[in-house]
Image (cartoon, rainbow, N blue to C red; front, side):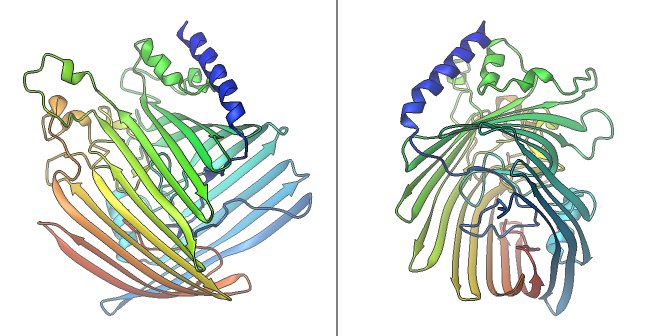
Amino acid sequence: MYLKEMKKLFKLTILLLFPLCMYGQINTFRTGENILFSQKFLNKSNTQSFDTTTQISIVPRIFVVSSTSNNRTYNSYLLGVNLSANIGNKFTIIANYDKLEGNHNSLITDYLDSLGVYPAFGATNTRFHFNLKYNLNKFFTIDAGKGKHFIGNGYRSLLLSSEHSPYPYFKLTTEFGPVRYYNLYTTFLNPEMNDYGRKKHAALHFLEFSLTKNINIGVFESILWQSKSENVDKGFEFAYMNPIIFYRPVEFSMHSSKGNALMGANINTTFYKTITYAQVLLDDLNISRKKDADENYEAGFFQNKFAFQFGLKTRIKGVNLLAEYNHTQPYTYGHRTILQNYSHMNQSLAHPLGANFKEIVIITDYKKDRWNFRLKITSGKIGLDSLNTHYGQNIFASDYNASTGGQHSYGNFNGQGVLTTINTLQAEVVYSLKGIDVFGSVYCKKKKSDLVDQTSLWYSVGVRTFPFSTFTDY
């Protein structure tokens, strides 16, 4: 009964929106760039175009960098190959194979020691990404492969980002006039689990439409569930293949709690040379707690978990500028069942800082002839955990173990725990030749709290055939 009503409501909503949807929308849901710590160049398209109806290309992927800090030199290099094929403007194949070698800088080795994976790779220093895309007709496109996706218009995404390891996926894109609707089905891994709980599956929905030629809105939903527990072997539940967005609230109305659900929205506006954008993510919301017979009630209940983002991109006298603010409350993206948190291969599927933080990102980019100058600054305040505590930053700990009161945790606020400031600065100069970039960069990271005060400074030179970096910006 509830499902039939939701289907009717969905159809009615689409019919009401069509008269308002006058123009095509920005490509907000896109395939993540298959690179390590992408520079995410402003105004850079993630799609690849072909001039002919049939074309096959094989291109080498090369990245070599030498970095110096404290009179020590570290060298990293990546060798790979890219295969791209377009057949009859209907079938597209894109595949990358990469291998990362060298005596890496401490940011890569510390990441590997902490999480057991190479950043943006996986448990090994090799990776194979591929995408098979077929246009069924002008309305439907099918994608399948192994890779990453990104939802949003900013530098970060609080819905689904591409900072982590790749995963297998199947995606269906439906286009009808100015409306796009995406269904993404994936399998994520908890690598430290040998048997039960190692796999978790997810169904993600994203509906995108334009209110006017300048205002674009997207609605997001993600449902993630354990493949196997100690008592039940669920596997992939095909009931979640239902393509109707907002199916999860219907499931709640039927008193089911099989998985972890997140909902959100994305909006962007375009005026002249300026794009403003925003995101909001809702993990849990318990507004009824105040009405409960709880004599100890106070604000900041731990199950009120949300995140939001706003920013702008503009161009001033030839200089591209991005300014962005990200804010995530404690315990967001976590779950009472650890194996159902919003993660893959020990990495967050949204912002790489996890939760319990606020952050500012500023990026400038200027190009003149063959020269390109970039400056990126990030500044974040994050509430970290000390030994045997859980103040909401670590999404791999159970919500019910909250150090502020377990299942009755109140008084939570952004930045609680060990308040830590993390600032990064990266300045880069690039000279482009035919098919290859020669670059030099300066990278500085400062991490400070009552318990730690660390500063690292790196100077790098290198060559590359595609955007690539070995330094984190968080």
